[in-house]
Image (tube, rainbow, N blue to C red; front, side):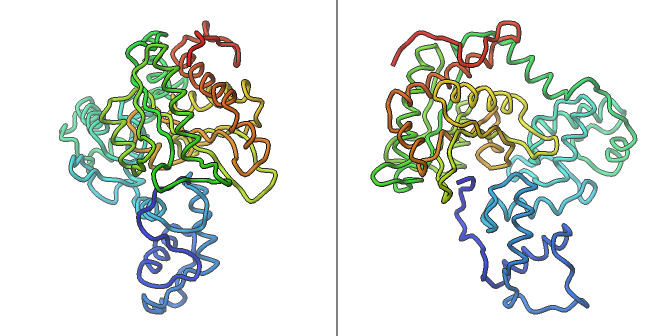
Length: 383
């Protein structure tokens, strides 16, 4: 559910050149042993075996991807990006084909540590990163050309951290949210109901994830709109936009917040509860306001529904990574669990979830001294 793969995923038992490419990437990362004596078995005979699957699962876990042991588009792209280290190539902004890679992430993190606003450390060299890079070059007497070459690298490596006392990105983002005021009038919020159209998502009998999350999205839309926000839904009943289309829609709308709604299922009879996800690598780079909102919204829903709290987790899914605003994916329970399913089929519970989302959005914009305890924020009852 974390990926939106348009390529046929590589999996256990597959063979061929694409599998050989995955092997090469895993070997370069030290996750597979080097080929013995430089032997070349031939591209068509390279097999996706149990060792490959284990290595892929390890890579997915570390990178914050869905851990399924298969290589779809997101995992394939992440393997390609992981090969790059800072200094391997010249880095510059290309609006047509933005550069991606771990070297870009390292550059962004270094600029952020030094106090320059390079945008989110997402491994995509966009216009914000170029602005931060040019500002750094200008301040340190380098040619301000927005290209990270040998001279810029030397300067970056020679300098210690400039900002202390907390992540500078967190300080910037939190301050801008609070400074913008506590009201929701004029806020642009995109609510994304997962799946749709021919893609029903998780199903149980006649109950589908796509239908339930669309109902949830409509309830959330009504409550946010009543509070003064401008709300956009990414799809209607018969539509199933790709993840790239959903994020592009939010970016084009210049949204302040992106909320993606899903339900879950699992073969274990014990799997139940509410989880939230925000952009993050698990090793420092993250959407700080996204993380804050993921915690707020999950706790509000748990407090109002009594569902099990499964925590908030960093992920590098494209749905969270490609949005230019704080983005959160919310898994509102397991259709495969009888208790969660009964709750989700109750319209009153779905209204309580919508109220929880509204309370969390409102709390996101409140200064700390005015923020009420979880589950106590009351707004006008409507819808």
